[in-house]
Amino acid sequence: MDAAEPGAAGIAVVPELAPIAVLCSGPVRYRDEDGKRYVHMVGLHVLVRGEQKELEALLCLNYPNGTYPTRLYFRVNLGLGLNWNENAYIFATQWFSWSWKDVKATQSPIEILAGHLEALR
Image 1 (spheres, helix red, strand yellow):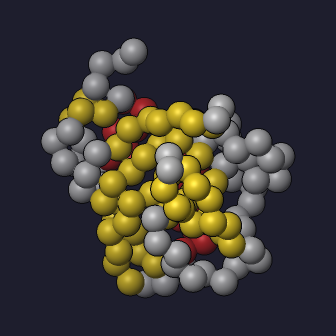
Image 2 (cartoon, helix red, strand yellow):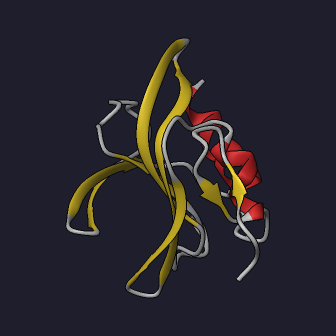
């Protein structure tokens, strides 16, 4: 495993997650479930329709759908009203996502996150 670097909260993270950790007030780490790899982010600072929010989020890096190969989930339903919304149980917790396609899994985790955050503008 790669050496860890400190994130914004002073918590060690693997180097490829360091750019995401800067956006979070809590820990950022990889988690795996059912063959999917997630980036779990605590205290992710985002703008939602111009309003600053701090949210817990999961970024799925390898969702098994050719049109939606990555997904971003939040612990709260942001009510974005895009094409469809999904309620999913991941790590025994309810998460919410929405329709936002064509964010390629071949990108770095920060690029995938940025692609999904476009939907919140």
